[in-house]
Image 1 (spheres, helix red, strand yellow):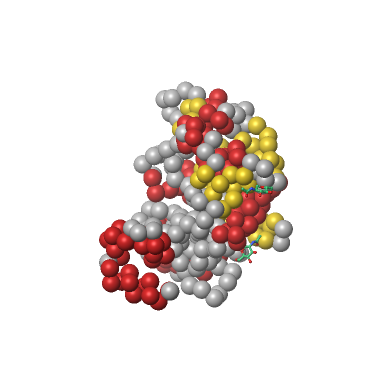
Image 2: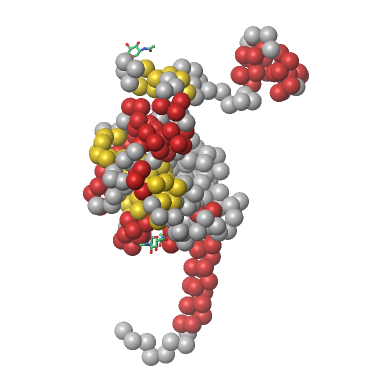
Length: 305
Ligand SMILES: *[C@@H]1O[C@H](CO)[C@@H](O)[C@H](O)[C@H]1NC(C)=O
Ligand SMILES: *[C@@H]1O[C@H](CO)[C@@H](O)[C@H](O)[C@H]1NC(C)=O
Ligand SMILES: *[C@@H]1O[C@H](CO)[C@@H](O)[C@H](O)[C@H]1NC(C)=O
Ligand SMILES: *[C@@H]1O[C@H](CO)[C@@H](O)[C@H](O)[C@H]1NC(C)=O
């Protein structure tokens, strides 16, 4: 259909352009357009984040997307959902022919037992910017099914800006579990200008090309995975040599028979009343009192005894 007179269109176009502009400055896909549940309200940080920031992590936890949930999961549930998230990602990327590999803490988890570190909800993967460009071109906002669950691939439009100055948009894409709000951070690597053999991502991690490539094939959470060529060197550089030998970390101990990180204690947040009570019990009342004030503390203790 050809419109004869389009004069009425121009205000409409201006309005649409204006709305598009708004949606651009406010970042990630709108809550109402992506939500699948109606029993909670929006928990993303859109209101408080700078306008230029695309992703708005939830206000209650930096590794949950507040468009899909209003709470973090308990330890065991988070762990099993992260495993499924990781499997779904590796499986789906292989299916799309999008080359990707694990990096940072996720690679450290692989090093120990081919699994995600159970205390870490931050999952990191990399791909080249050509692959991110491919996903942005054909798969932005697509839903992928894996074992009856659904995952969203969302690409940050700022992936085309490779400058470190764009520090609010260092994550180029995300693989999001729309059931739980958990996600995987995808960063693109690009050649670093003026530095031969060096690649960088916007989160300012820089690696030598020969440490990354050729990628090796392995298994992670039961799925085939690619890992950087000189993983030992990368891990030692990032976390120190002790990260490859220390079998106690963050309330977990590595059992060399079961090859699992087993939880040794429930971690109390630093200032929790429970932690302060424990300190009283071992005769360190003064420190606990400094934390909470004597009166608060005595009341709290009585209530629980
Ligand atoms: C994921 O979390 C949900 C709670 O939201 C829980 O019921 C489920 O057992 C967890 N694990 C898996 C693999 O779904
Ligand atoms: C990848 O990054 C390089 C360096 O910034 C740039 O020259 C190239 O055009 C990018 N490729 C794509 C597909 O965006
Ligand atoms: C992907 O889609 C979302 C939602 O429409 C949009 O905000 C974003 O700019 C898109 N990303 C790219 C790379 O086009
Ligand atoms: C380590 O794992 C083995 C095999 O599952 C188990 O028998 C053993 O009790 C574990 N060790 C500790 C200290 O928990």
